[in-house]
Image (tube, rainbow, N blue to C red):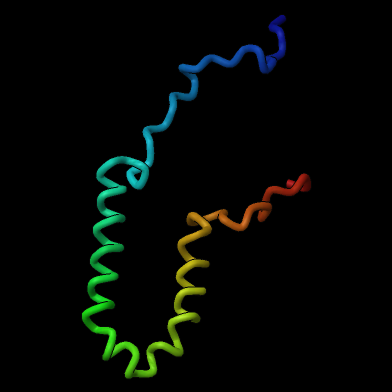
Length: 87
């Protein structure tokens, strides 16, 4: 008879480490910096049009929706959905 598997039988080669995320690499950080700098320069150059139109009223709402969409990290970002003991 075989012994039941225990936590001590874990071997690192069973689950190799994932490569680092693109956004944490040097190229990703440079891309984020360039996009932020470009956005700031674009906003500065077009500030008269942005402030003169009704866009400034909608900006907080758009920021909330954007943050909700991007800050959860994709599917399963709310945590706990579908992870109950009843499954």
